Image (cartoon, rainbow, N blue to C red):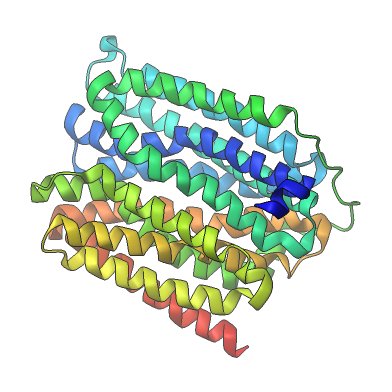
Length: 389
């Protein structure tokens, strides 16, 4: 804490983390609430619920390269503020989907999907923007710390936003929840507005996006495998608890978020100090254990413990492998590399929703977490190959 008070760049990084936290509550509160809203209010199946949650990541994947180029050429601040504006528009569109005039039919669901697609574009611009902005501000030697702090803001929002979103859905309805989700990004934009931008690195040769992906696909694959467990937990843990007749579904996301943030606080500088590969290896083993506990949980206490371990395991994989990714590109391509790297995680999030919904419909919700455990184990294998090379 003393170092943070003395170092102005660290103070700005902490401030930006808080801005990201408040902004990302709009994503975190809507994620479990959308699944429950589609299932209970619209009366659709688990595949439809999973699609509504996961489709946001489709537009995120498709826009990562563009967001990275925007951050590289115009600066991270421009990208982040544009993303926060899109967050607000997305929440208003989701709000419009629940107007009484539309009823609870296909039209309402299609408009909701459009809002979720717009939310994915906002997520792409916001995350790439804040990472590029803060990396330029802190310097390459602290890239791992920047990614760790950004993750604390995001998943701290999940810790708070999961139960808060379900509570608001119950007490204020979907419209009330979306009104708050539209307002929170505006708060984040106001906080970010007064932080000075950083001039982008001097432009150099810009290879095709596919060529950048070719440089970073190995660490990207690892972070994608890690993301399957989180996506399964975020989309289906509330429905898993409801199917079992257990209470406290929202607290599962809280346990995940607490484990995630605590590990970032304790180990945020480890990738910069010892390298990304050993940190990712240990983290994936913990995530696999957490997913296995969720799969086999005989009661809600064990399930919450599994959610906590999943959060602890997922926590450091993104900054650890992200550090490995940005090492492979020059400074003027760092935003593009971040965008491409994050797209692997987005792909995992987007595909997991509908696939896991199909698995839940045919084999039960518990089997969703078995898939998460297998994915984390495959991530361990991929990380071992990175270490050998």
